[in-house]
Length: 160
Image (tube, rainbow, N blue to C red; front, side):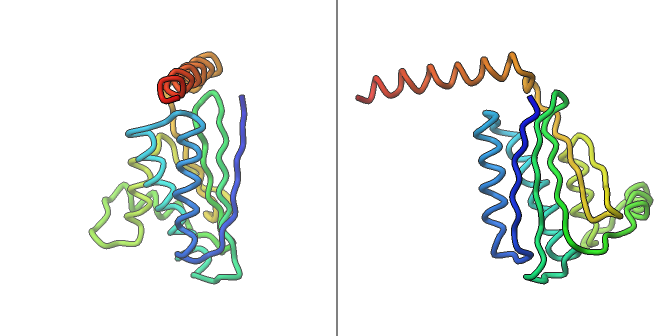
């Protein structure tokens, strides 16, 4: 079942449309709508913005790598930049003490609220987010695909 998808973007806000496209492709592939799609899009957008602004410091020569992998647990999405990283242990301490409006770390707090699990790797230059998706196992996934295929066949026949 492990399927992977990856894109690399330049460190510029002009590339954010590709992040939205990536989230839409994930949603379409796994038939995710509503909260799942919204949570993934918002968390992914925040993670990529952090990578572009704080990690790569808006350096167009650097890239942000976005990878998605589906497992039995759900969808894992990681965002990696080419920056030095940050002390994510301090972030965890700040989270325990509560954030103040306008702080740079509020995006990370939002990611923690939207994703089911969040972890950092590579000295903080990679964030991994897990979205536990109900029914992402093979059997239910195959049923969803078959349902959509049947629906599209009927829809096409009716509109022919």
